[in-house]
Every structure is written in structure tokens, then in C-alpha cells.
Image 1 (cartoon, rainbow, N blue to C red):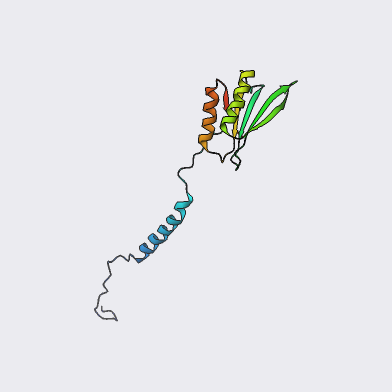
Image 2: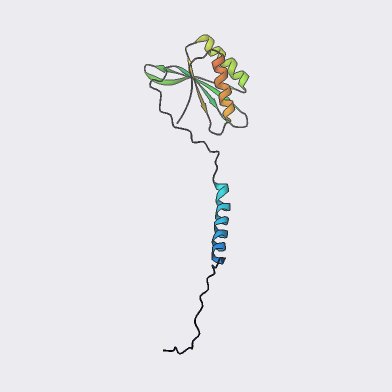
Length: 147
């Protein structure tokens, strides 16, 4: 039996075509180059804190804001007949002024707690410095405000 084409046998190529693999690798390289700046490995996921079991009835709130004037608000809160209210509000232009006012509050009422509520854009170091200096004044109960 002979075929119509003759006795010539077909020979198969045993080579791998690498051009599609190179195309796929280049596309993946571009995707990773574009996606790499979008991920920030230094982001810290802070845990959420539950409320304390019992909030102090009287406390001093130190509100730190990152605006241009760098004002520090001191809000003294208290309760009157079971209703929380703001007793007084003062502002301090710098940390030294803040510590003087805090020292005066601590001298008149040494059992007052301090609550530091800082804006999320403020430097972490500034918050730690305020907490550290409040502890140096002898204030035993210093807390951070959370949402």
C-alpha cells in the first residue's frame, strides 16, 4: 500500500516555542511593577480597644491637634448629678505651657485622671512625650482616647 503523497514521512519538530512564555513573563513583570508601589509594608494595623470597665467621673482631657498653630486644648470634665459635662476649657500654645497648666490641675486635685486624645495625623512621638511628662508629674492614671 502506498500513499498518494509518496513515501515521504512527516518529521515532527521537537522544539519548544518560548515566545509566548516571554510575553506572559513581561506582562506579569509590568503588573508587579505597577502593583508594588500600591502596597505599603510599613502600615501598622492597630488593634481596637474596648472601653474601660469604669470610666473615671472626673478627668482632664488633653486634645492634641496637628494644625499650624499646634494648639493643645485642656478640657476638664466632670459629672454633675450623674450627667457628664465640660467644666472648663483652656488652650496651651506649647508643651511647656501644657505641663504648667497640668501641674496646676494636679496640685489642686491630685486624683484627677488624664485622657490624651490626639488627632490621627499627629506624630506618635508627641503623644508619647505628653504621656511621659504627665507620668513624671505624678499623675498615675493616664489613658488614650479611641473611637
